[in-house]
Structures are given as C-alpha cells and as structure tokens.
Length: 95
Image 1 (tube, rainbow, N blue to C red):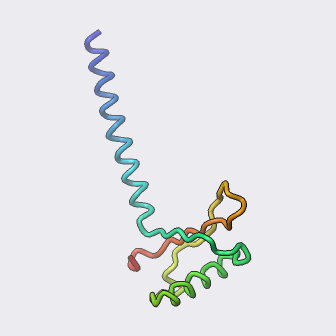
Image 2 (cartoon, helix red, strand yellow):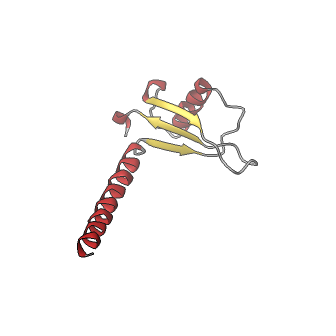
Image 3 (cartoon, helix red, strand yellow):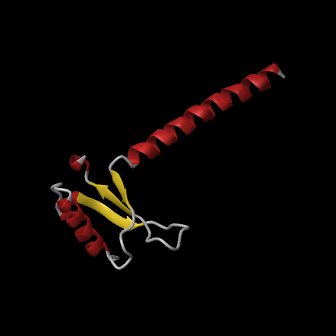
C-alpha cells in the first residue's frame, strides 16, 4: 500500500510540473501578441485589418509597416453588442 501511495505522490508531482511547463509555453507563445478592442466590424478582411493596425500605430507615432505583422485576425466573443477583438501577432524583432 505504501508503494502505491508513493507512486501516486510521484505522479501528482510530475503532473504539476507538466502543467507548469505547459502554462509557461502558452504564455511564451503569446508574448508577441496584442489584443485591440472596439475596432468596427466594417474593417474585416485581413488586409484591411493589417492596414487599420498600421494606421493606428502611426497615430500613436509608432513605426510599424505591414511586414512587421506576422498574423492578424478577429477572435470570437460572447458579447454580441461589441465588435470582436482583434489579435495581432508581431514578428519577434518588433518587441
């Protein structure tokens, strides 16, 4: 019985370490992402989103060109009264 309890404890410890490693990877994968809210849905296609983001950065006096954007898209939301948020993944050299 003691060996079973020891094995359970070992597996729980290993499981905790694995969960921590997954969380770290998840956080690391999002480190170059920005989330932008309240952009009208009329700006919808990827090229339009990219241009809108570059223009937004220009208004903030941040030098960004379209090639600095690795990926850009809208994400689903439960709130149907607000425009869906936009996630921008910048190329690593931008951060």
